[in-house]
Each structure stands twice: as structure tokens, then as C-alpha cells.
Image (cartoon, rainbow, N blue to C red):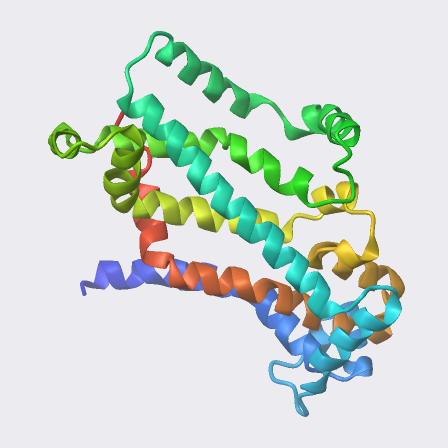
Length: 285
């Protein structure tokens, strides 16, 4: 490695340490005693780089505290988050890939206009549709169920549809023609040819959707009114309201770290496909 490239790594390493510091701060505070955690929250200078006596039981105590307030338990909230996130990711990948295939490979009148209208919806703030959607779901009797959180994913996402469309448009026509000669229809071409080739785009769609839904607080707060149906984000907020003092901050940090672990693991597992998808999803038209 040349000396110039070596010095170029210095600001990158500094930036990485800067980004990782909040995560390290949360980890250290979650392992400290109540007095140490309270002091570190008030003054960063009071934070120890390594806890002298790590309090590993803080994680189990924090999970028990969530269950002892008014929730059915930490595991129930975890199960609710897993169910909502899994269904939303699955429906988003299927719907966006289907629409992307139609826009990229099926020729029909008005295709360009529909594609332009779809892209225009990306400029519409979600706050504009929040109240109308709530009124629609309330009239359907879906409030206090997970349906308002997962059913919209069946209608796709404009950004991910754009990525699928751009990627599928780059697939050689010879592959599609070969599949059609074997008797495949559009659905079989989409399932057997396009989806295996779209692994990078599927990865980036799954990661982005997972992180957003897993950390979503507003949606579950609006639609899920029963305590036993609360997701992790809502349960964590309730814990903060019940135990928001400086004497319990170590529990809040422990629960926050537990909530972040699935997002970190998913990114590490899908890192290669994720980065490849960022480069391929919208390079060529």
C-alpha cells in the first residue's frame, strides 16, 4: 500500500471510531452500577472506558422489568416485532420485485407514465397520508391488529420498485427468451430467472425494510392499542416512561442494545450483497 493510500485511511479510521463511540458508550453504561451509569449520563467524562466490575445481570434485570410493569413480557414484545418485521420484509420484496419486473420486461401502453407517477410518489411526505390511512384502517376494523402494519407492504415501495426495475432492465434478453422457449410464463420468468439474479437488490431491500420496521415506533403506537400486542419499540418507550430516572439508565441502555443486535447481525450477514446492491441498483437505465 502506498503512503498516500495509508494516510487516506487515517480520516476513515477516525470517522469509524466517531461513529462507533455511541455504541460503545451504550455498552459500557449498560454494564455499570446505577450510580456509575447515572454519573456517565450526566457527564461524559465520568464514563469508564472499561467497566471495573461489569454488571452482566443488568440485561436479565432489564428484561424482567419490562415484564413487571404492564407488558406481557419482553419475549412477547420481541415475538410481535419479529412477526411484523418478517411479514413486512417478505411482502415488500415480493410486491416490489413483481412491479419492477412488469415495468422492466412487460411492454404495455402507459408504462412510462405509470413509472413517472410512481416516482413522483416518492416526493409525498408520509405525514400527508397518515390520517387518511388511519381512517381507512379504522373503517375496516383493522385497528389493534398487525394488518395496518403489514398490508401496505403488499402495494410496494416506490424506491425499491425503482431499484428492481433498473436491475431487471439490465438482464440480457437472451436469458428471458430462453426461459420462454422452455414454456415459462411471466410469473415463472420472474421466479426462476429474475429473482435469483436480483440477490443484491433483494438484500438491500430486505436490510432497509428490516431496519425501518424493526425500529418503527409511530406505526405500532398508532395502530396497536393492546399491551400484549406491543412491539419492542413501544415496549422500550413504556420502559423509559416508567423507569426514566438516572438510577435506571443502565437498564434502558441494555434494552436498547438488545433491540439493536438483530439489525447489526442482519447487516453483517448480508453485507456483501448489500454493498453490491448499492452499486448495481441504479447505475444504468
